[in-house]
Length: 146
Image (tube, rainbow, N blue to C red; front, side, top):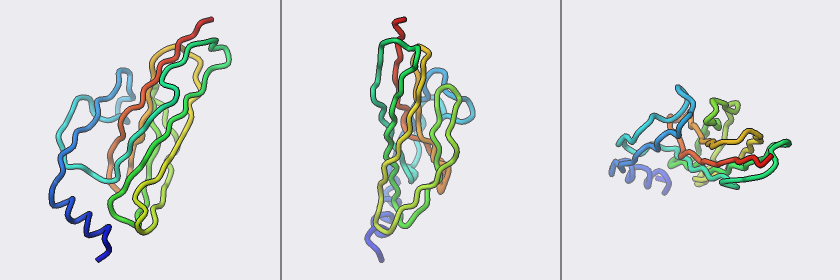
């Protein structure tokens, strides 16, 4: 048995507990993770998102671009993951596919969001298959000075 599958069986048997992140204020209804915290067995694949910068202040006439970097991890390989980026303004990217080769358990993904309206916003990854799950919400703030 391949080591990755042996590790998967061991982890699945342990039923690792996890919590889902809370949705930010103004998050998309119907496409965002449920509000509050819920206890569940950890599902794979998983995702984690960061944003740079986390805040920006300046002239918003041309808008400002925020860059989101995510890590998607799988337990069993090979695997194909279908996902999309979801935003707090109800926007979403088209569905994308990510293929993991034998023994390859993590991959990086990224996207950008150019915005010129002041406020607080966030973006997350929604995993659509092979299991449905969400990443954390990566939040940023835009402050316009003009």
